[in-house]
Structure formats: structure tokens, C-alpha cells
Image 1 (cartoon, one colour):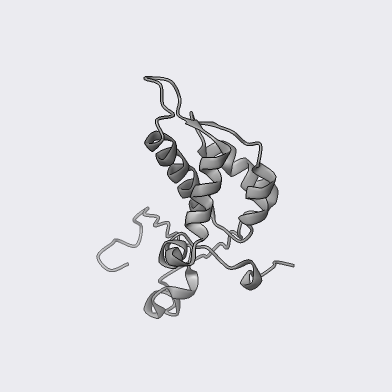
Image 2 (image 1 turned 60 degrees about the vertical axis):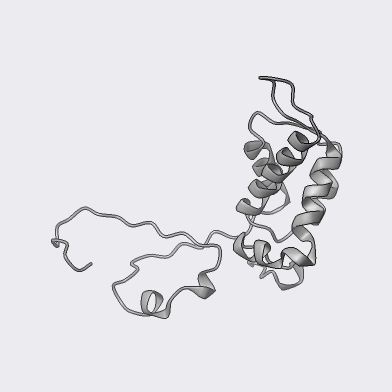
Length: 141
């Protein structure tokens, strides 16, 4: 990079959900990016583990988890994180919070948050979160 000594130990890590939209001057000029690593979309078991990770201290009713996993094929990890955040907001709005106790997220809240994220009116949000329509998902193989 311009302005750095050749022996400078500097590493830049660039991440994106949409590599197809990166500026060509960055992606097509030699020396700009030394290595690119593709990490595919999370599979069903990965999504299950991500939900467990991202729920943190939330008490989430996972009785409808299989349905949620079915409906989230083609989503990114950031989409799942946003799903849990929105579920928690709905729970707080419904008064499902008791002082310093963890927020109680009912299965209904998870369903409502997912329906909202998948609603056609939220296309821009899905794009920002890296959502791919399952019919358009590229399968590694």
C-alpha cells in the first residue's frame, strides 16, 4: 500500500456479504488483495449453532426452531443476529422483561421478527444483511 515501508507488518482484513458488489479497482488490480477466502452461507446445523451463540442471555423459546431453520435457508450470520435482536425488541415492547432478568423471547416473537425480515417491504434490509433467495443460492460442490 502507498505510504507503508516494504517491511511493515500490517494486515488488513476485509469482509463482505456481497463480494459481487466490490469496487473493481479493488478486486481486479494486482497487489490490492493478496488472498481472498470464501466462507459460504451457513447450513442448517450452522444456523442452529449461530442462533444459540447469538441469543446470548436471551431466554428464547425454541419450540418452533425447526420451522425457523427451514425459513432461513440462504441467510447470513448477520441476518440471524438481526433476527434475534428484533425478537428481543418485540419481547421488550410486549413487557416480557423482569428487572435484571434475561429477556424472555416467546416463539411468537421469533416468528413475528422473521416474518418482518422476510416481508417484501424489507428487501433493502435483507440485501444489507446479505440474504440470498434460496432459489438463487449457489451450492458449493
